[in-house]
Length: 441
Ligand code: PMP
Image (cartoon, rainbow, N blue to C red; front, side, top):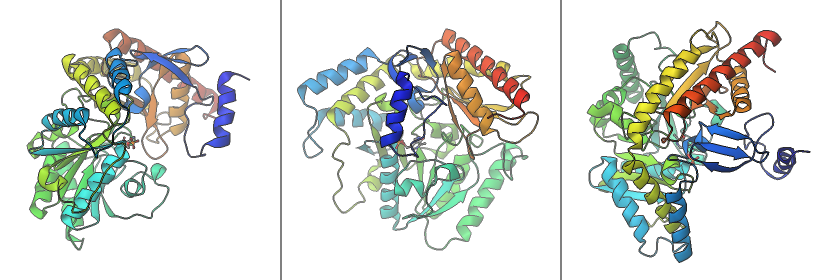
């Protein structure tokens, strides 16, 4: 029995069945450096998924590791009952970067909890549990977050503390409005939103949306969609929550936050973040203007949110990102990677679309020559890429037919070219397998 087999059988014996694992033979990653990781059997991989877009700067970044060790040696935990210098300092930086005026920041330990907090704030502020969410959305795994998930693969129950209405707009190239031009698409989505609101009694609390859907397969509406939505929301006093858990911190290259692609909208009322800011340390949070953040009239704390060690790591990581202009790198190297991936996909009848921006690129796969999403092919390509030495993700509902390419933002041009070449071979291998077997087992 190999090391991986042995750990897999122990994993299966004590962990939940629904804790999804990648690969027919799942791997244990034992260490990393830069954009590379190694597994327990000594294989080295170029990492184009960063533990679900979370290794934002680089693996084993010395600046982050040192900040963690230094803080851990001083004090690991104090709780929010005492003044916490690393938390105040990181809050100042995040508030300043958020674009939200008179911003307040509340730190949590995950993106789920950040969204849960934003929903709590919106419900309390607007005295309503009605929420608008996008179709094909993903916002986390808690009871409230599942209640605003528009993706069946991630919705284990229909019970919810919220009443959710799902809005069109984040899936551009499928669905009833796919054939329209960008302008017509936006108009159709706005008309749908107005109609939905006119049919809904009571006052809706908020719209929560990912500027580019992550788990949903790196898909988004045209730029300006949320500016058009914002006008409708403003007419009715409905808040806008931008879930930046995947799109924040410059990953999209052109912008620091995903909402900025809809610039005319101005900043959202609330912004949620997690994943990349901690480079793996558990930091999530919500930024809101003071009036919204301070609307709760009962106490609320998070024992672990804003813990000094995670805050020290977040500061070191954010400092590195800004000093090295990794947003600029995401724009430059992301453009190159997109070009290489488009070249790799050209002539492959299993690729329907290569899309995204910056270092957030989706490759949608279909059964050859059809428009039928192919989760089986996506799994086969992910598997073949691993065999070739490249880790990528998958997503997109239903079933996961979109390859998700999202390396750390420090990716070099040489690594982008190397990764694209591995993916090109993986596409060919999976395609040939499909042709040979008439299906992918
Ligand atoms: N929002 C988005 C857009 C996400 O992609 C995720 C995680 N995939 C979450 C929220 C939930 O974050 P977490 O897993 O840290 O709870």
